[in-house]
Amino acid sequence: METETEDSKLMAKIAGGDKSAMKLLVDRYKEKAYYLALGMVGNSDEAYDVSQDAFIRVYRSAKKFHSGSRFFPWFYSIIANLCKDVLARRMKKEVPNIDIDDCEFLLAEEGNPESVVLEKEQARMVRKAIMKLPLEDREIIMLKHFRDMSYDQIAALLNIPKGTVMSRLYYARKKLAAMLEEFD
Image 1 (cartoon, rainbow, N blue to C red):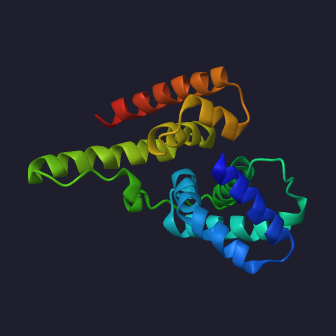
Image 2 (image 1 turned 90 degrees about the vertical axis):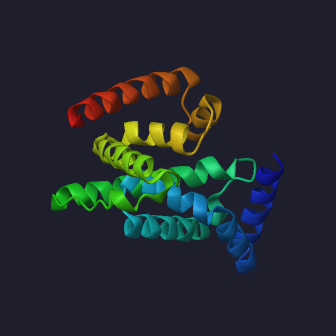
């Protein structure tokens, strides 16, 4: 709750033209924005672009932000919409621009060299399968398993019922499992 209050205060300052407030907001959310975008678009350069564009939109739309609203769900919707735009442009070009091997947030931990190789190979296969999922499925898996969000947090973030989160996650996991079986 404290962060939400601080975010609302920052947004009010940003709406008034305070660039130092914008810097504080960027510092607070830049890493989270990047990794959310990376999980959805699968490309480091595009994830940086999306996260930067999201902050530009926040700055430009600060006066439209309602002080009683929660900042992060609003910000997340901006990131998600920008990711959808990137993916739509990519589909028009019919050139997959995915550097899934650069997704550090899925890499295996260091340890025994043989187990490290096996874990990294498994992580590579999981990354590859996740990137083949539709965006809605990829998003729900990323939020639950890589951002470690609860069902309630995901429901609030996506503005959907908790039961819908559970259902989407169930079917997304089934699709992911089927894809992973194909790799075996």
